[in-house]
Image (tube, rainbow, N blue to C red):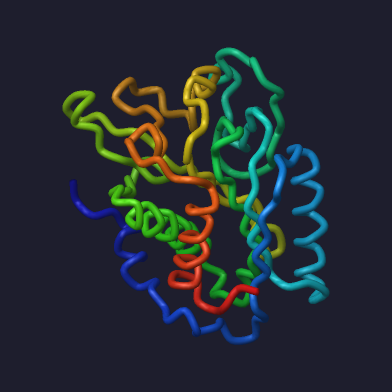
Length: 240
C-alpha cells in the first residue's frame, strides 16, 4: 500500500519533548479514576474549551473511560445503528457511529489550534501519529489509511486484505479550540461493536480489535504512561 497523504504530514511532526509551542502554557494532563457519564464529559469539555478560548484555563488532555454507550457523529446514518443495546448520544463531533465502554482508553484533547497553526488536517495526522507511536511501544504496528480515518492493524490471519481498527478519531473544532479526540481499544468487550456499523465501515474485511485481542495483555496505567510520553514527542511542550 502506498503511503497516505497523512503519512507525509506525520513525517514532519516529531518535536523535542521540551519544545513548547510559542504562546502556549504547559498542557494539563488529567486521568479520571472512574467511568465518566457521557453527558458529563460533554459539559466538561464545553466549559473547558470556553475557558481556554477566553485565556482563563490551560489546554487539557483528559483520559477516561465511559460506561457502555454509542455516540453518533455529524455524518452518522440511521441505518448504521443496528441494535441500540446501549444509550445513544449525539456527540457533535465529526464522523459516524462509534462505541465507548470499559477497557477502552478515551483521550479528549482540548488544544488551542489558533496558536498551533490553524491546520485541522495536520492536527488529525498528529493524533494518528500519537496513537501509532503508542501502539509501537507494545509491538503493534498501527497504520493510516487514506480512505479510512483512525488507526488500523493488518490481519492476515483472518484472510487476504483483512484489517481491524484499533483506534478511532473524532474531533470538533470550536473557535479554533479542539474538542473530543481519540479512543484506543485496550481490552473492551469487542462484541459491543456489533450493535453499530463502526465509523460507517461496513466492508466485512474490516473489523475491530484491541491490544488484548492481539495478544498484548497490558493495563490502562501502562497505556497511559506511554500515551503521555508520546504526546510530548508529537505535540511538544511539557504536560503538568
